[in-house]
Length: 123
Image (cartoon, rainbow, N blue to C red; front, side):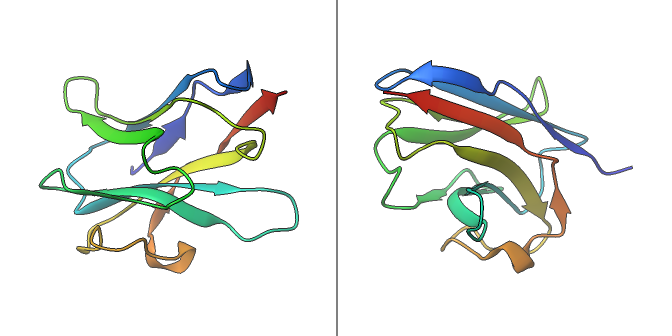
């Protein structure tokens, strides 16, 4: 059974760091990504990685967040540094077996989703 499960969320002060692992039944999907969503807003992609390791980021997180895979632990990780007051959201990992890492694909592109994890940033 295909499963994705996020962890590592919580509250952190502005300027701090969090790492979100997404445990996956496998991490060799052609495209894996992280999304975030705030109440009343659409779910938006912030980072994606292809099977070959290439990555793409939204401008709002580029230079602060890093997406990576840990094949030994079978996780898709999101390292979040220099967190800002505008970063709080539900964070979701997603996967699909079509190539799509070259640009940030919308929510409807992805076949498999985790349940999400809350991240809060205090000023």
